[in-house]
Amino acid sequence: MTKKIAVLPGDGIGPEIITEALKVLYFLNTDMNLGLEFEHGLIGGCAYDVYGTPFPETTLALAKAADAILFGAVGGVKWESLDIALRPEKGLLGLRSELQLFANLRPAKLFPQLAHASTLKPEVVAGLDIMIVRELTGGIYFGQPRGIRLLANNERQGFNTLVYSESEIERIAHCAFKIAQQRQSKLCSVDKANVLESTELWREVMITVSHHYPDVQLSHLYVDNAAMQLVRAPTQFDVIVTTNMFGDILSDTAAMLTGSIGMLPSASLDANNKGMYEPIHGSAPDIAGKGIANPLATILSAAMLLRYSLAMLPAAERIEQAVASVLDAHLRTQDIYSEGMQKVSTQAMGDAVLAQLQKGE
Ligand code: NAD
Image (tube, rainbow, N blue to C red):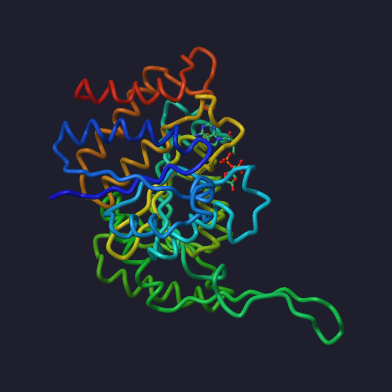
């Protein structure tokens, strides 16, 4: 059965890194007879230049019809002065909300070859392999009422609402438990149940849902302790599930434990595991067109796409193994370069991953 992949390279380094990820996918598609079909679309600044909107109807239709979406990055100086509704980032946010991508998966995995790149001691991060599952479409970022109001004493007051319904918590819980089952079967739910009623409910629902997954060991941490543990002893974690705002903060902390923004993939999934896959970094206008961007985060995003939306685990593992082999061979793009290594371009890094796959490794 064919599977449709919508390819949305976007702006800046987006097209450069997507080109390298596609090399890998095209090869595996033929080599493993995966039945993938690819269709390209415009999103972000490049879409604005052609259609006058960062999120054209044709792109939405393409994304809706696809089984999974491979996304580069959007944004750039050229579009920064546009009205906020027309800025490139609106395309990304539009996709997330139109497709109801409520589960954001952010792995923070340390490749042992890059242990020195972390700001933590190598022995603290050795073996680090965490998956953060962040609720992406609810919580305080979307809760109503919100705004800035004028009080009777003429002072302005800003306010937001932290709100979670049981069904919103249930669906992210199921998603996180299923992911834990595919890993070390350890799930840590992060909340602030001692202070916030909405996360008291979060904890209750997590416990209720856990009864469907007796093979997964569920634990709970308050967010302040979780932040501390992430930098004290990060390898204690397997999967972390948390709210939109806590996940926003903790996933960036976890990402930095691995040292490089150019190495980290991500996924945003809907209730049926349809997803959008993208590197965690942006369009890096400062290095666009120079051929020095690291394509590995995007190549690893392609591996996540195969794993989570298409359940093609052997193909995903081949990509991950090929990336590890390339690092073993001391190839480094500029962002992860250190003395004694071989500095390579974006294209050369993609070619090296492809060559590993062609060797059958
Ligand atoms: P950024 O992630 O684009 O860049 C931050 C720094 O990391 C830069 O120095 C950049 O050169 C470097 N970097 C990023 N990716 C790299 C890679 N693959 N290889 C090597 N180095 C890399 O963040 P920023 O500079 O804050 O934002 C630039 C633009 O990207 C803005 O327009 C912003 O709105 C947009 N943005 C888009 C997304 C997205 O599309 N998902 C996410 C974040 C930012």
